[in-house]
Structures are given as structure tokens and as C-alpha cells.
Amino acid sequence: MSKFITFEGMDGAGKSTHLNWFADAFRQRGLDVVVTREPGGTKLGEQLREMLLNQSMSIGTEALLMFAARLEHVEQVIKPSLGMGKWVISDRFSDASFAYQGSGRGLDWSKLKQLEEWVHGDLQPDLTLFFDVPVEVARQRLASNVSLDRFEQEQVEFFERVREGYHRRIRENPQRYVVIDGAQTMNEVKLILEKIVISL
Ligand code: TYD
Image 1 (tube, helix red, strand yellow):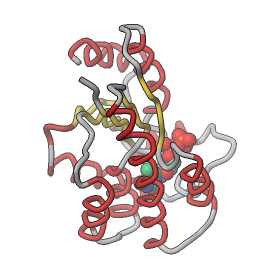
Image 2 (image 1 turned 90 degrees about the vertical axis):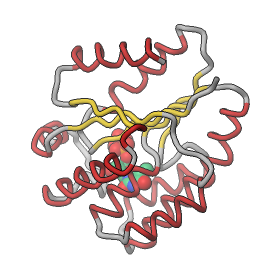
Image 3 (image 1 turned 180 degrees about the vertical axis):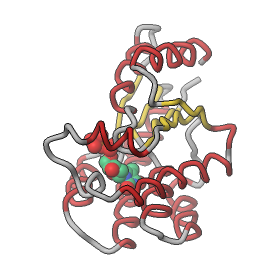
Image 4 (image 1 turned 45 degrees about the horizontal axis):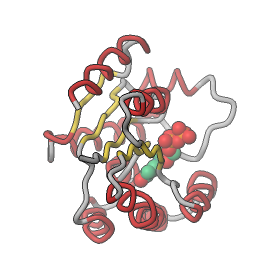
């Protein structure tokens, strides 16, 4: 049976580093895997990503564009792929909107719930891997990046709220998540992911 798996975490938590390896581990077992990301994942979604990461805008606009990109992504990529029996692994999904636009920027959680219900009320990830790291660790990792996007340039307090937002989401629906301590070494994280691959 096909599965929809998402990777989440703060910028600098290390999720993107592990995602491709994780997908390859399933491919080696003969599964057809689609790797995708948010915001993005479709032609229009990637155009929206460009704006979202670089242009300043009001908080509401930011949330609506995230979900507009998501609607395209769900309809054009995620649902059709799952329908064909493929596995879909997405670098971020709606949890990021609750954490960043909701807790980070202060947008009403209930508005986001309405958008979530509208855009994918009938679809949730089967599993979400949340890479959790202390904010200082995440920021140290980002410090070596040459160019930082609009989110990555935010202050420590913003990221503290984002992290708390993720934890709030996890408390609401704990059975969907595996929390991974992203402060561990690459190899330690890989060992945990290998176990998850085998269990799936
Ligand atoms: P990210 O996965 O960090 O991209 P990269 O690894 O290339 O830097 O995602 C881009 C940013 O988008 C990230 O800072 C979080 C933000 N974001 C939101 O604020 N809300 C959302 O709903 C999504 C999907 C992402």
C-alpha cells in the first residue's frame, strides 16, 4: 500500500540532508518513490515558493499562498501519485504552516485549521518525521550558509515559537509523528532512519 510521508523541522534541523537517502532506501527495496517539497512541488508552486521566500507580504497573504501552493501540490502530485500506488515523501507539508505562520508569525490557529480542512480535509500524512533541535544548534548550522531566505533571517524568538508550534501540533495528534533528535551526528540519525525504513 502506498504511503505519504513528510519531513518537518526548523531550518537547520537537518531534515533535507536525510530525505534523499531515506527515499533511496525505499527505492532499493523496489518501491516507486516520489520526492517532493513545499512550498513547491509543481510549476506554479515553485513560482509561489520564489515569492514566499523572497518577498515581504502580510501574514495572511503568506498563509494563503502557502495553502494555494499546497492545493496545487495535493491535486497535481500527491493524490495522483498515491492513487498510482507510489510512495510520496515531501520535504514539509501543513505542519510547517501551523509552526511558521501560526506560532511563528502569530496567525490564528483556527484560520489555518479551516484552510487545512479545505485543501486536504481528506488527506493527512501517514507518518511525519520531525527533526527536533535546540534553536542555537539550528542557527549555528545556518550560519555557514551564504544566502539566507526570508524565514532563515528571522530572530531567535521566532524560531523558539516555531519549535513550540511543532510540539503543539505533535501533542494534538501524537500517533502520526516520530520525533528525531536532530542534534545527533549524521550517522546516529541514519541508524534511526534505517530502523524506520525496515519497520515500514
Ligand atoms: P525549507 O524546507 O527550509 O527549504 P530549504 O531547505 O531549501 O531552505 O523551506 C523553505 C521555508 O519555507 C522554510 O523556512 C519554512 C517555510 N515554510 C513556511 O513558513 N510555511 C509552510 O507552510 C511551508 C511549507 C514552509
